[in-house]
Length: 210
Image (tube, rainbow, N blue to C red):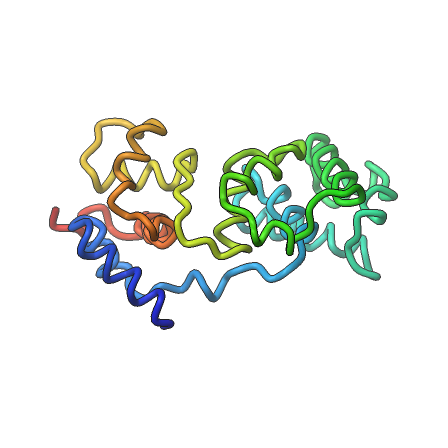
C-alpha cells in the first residue's frame, strides 16, 4: 500500500473509533485497484449506464453498448447511434437522452479531462452537472473513481447512509446534514472512509463491538 493510503487509514483510525473497527474488520484498502482510467466520455458513459442498476446488470448493458462501437467510443459515434440500437443494448429512454447530451457537450468546448484535473472538487461538480443525467452523486463518483480525489463524501449515496445508520446507532437513514456531520472527523480522507463504509455493508450485522 502506498504511503499516502497508509497515512490516511492511520488518520481515520485515530479520528473515529467506530470507523477504526470497520477498517479492522474490512481489511486491506483496495479501491486503487478499481479506479477508472478512461477519458471523460468513457467514464461518464459508464457512470450514466450504471445509475440505479445492480452492478451485474449495469456491467452487461455497458458491454453491449461498447459492442456498438468496434472502432472505439466517440461523441460523434454516440450521436449517430439510433435509439433503437441503444434500446436493443438495454438502455432506457432517459439514459439514451443522457448519453446523447453528454456526447453533445463533449463535442463543444466542454472542458477536457486535463482541464478538470486542475480544478477543485466543487468546480468540477458544477461543470459536470450541466450534462443531463449527471447529478451531484454521479459527479462525485467521477471525482472518486477517475480523478482519485481523496476527500469526497457522497452524502446522497444510499449505501453510505445505510452504513451510517447501521454502525452509528441511528434510528433512521441520516439526512444530508447528519451524514456530513458524521463525516467531518474523516477529513481530508473522506473518500477512503466512504469506501470502507460501502464494504462494511458486507460484514455481519453484529461484527462490531461498538
